[in-house]
Image 1: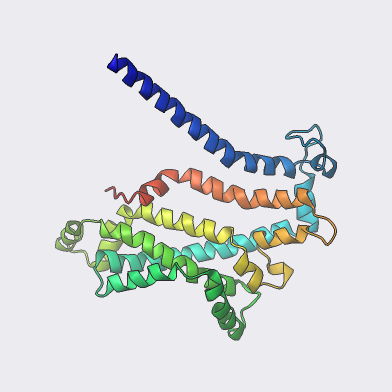
Image 2: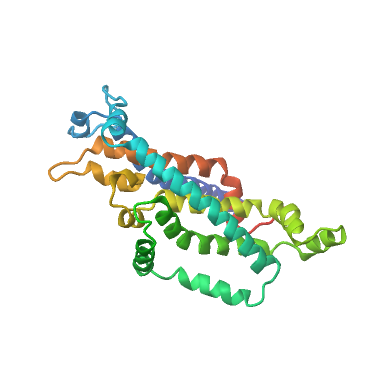
Length: 281
């Protein structure tokens, strides 16, 4: 009798677990699917009552209009240049810093980490004003360097925190063995530490990419020239005084969403491994 009850309880728990997962998946995926659906509808179908998920007139006109009339390709180019530049510089700086703090046990490294953790508690309004003043005095507002510099200020500390936690777990014996074989510090870093820390590096790169790719407040504050708008800032061009171009807005929102989804799905395993703090040789 007890075995039967235990078996029933396990089955019930399993069903509830899958049901919970299905509900969470629906709530997570449905808004994106509705966004894609809206981006493919003509205006009449968008405002139809009752609303329909799929209509007979779905097409790519909203995307074509966004490219021709709202500079969608220009916004995409700006976002790519700024995001990829920020991610590349962030990974170089953060990897070297994390190697020094976490693996080489840099003196006062714990103090540095406490400062970095503390910086994450500051609201963006506290940092955006001094960054704006700095970029203004450097005469780089409405240029790529201003946004890259502003994003580095937020992306580098987070990447250092992620990678330092990864570097700390790398066994010291690997570096000692490399030194016995004649490797200097840089060779040990490049040949031993980098391959082992790759999941952490990928995770930091993904986090930085998504954070910068979808950022709005800094991009809006540092750009007044529409030619320098990024994709998130470009969304506001669809909002007029009397109406909103929901088709074009949703088309641009889909363009914003797809790269982050593709990148995360492609390297999901490395991302999860890094967040779990695992180190695989």
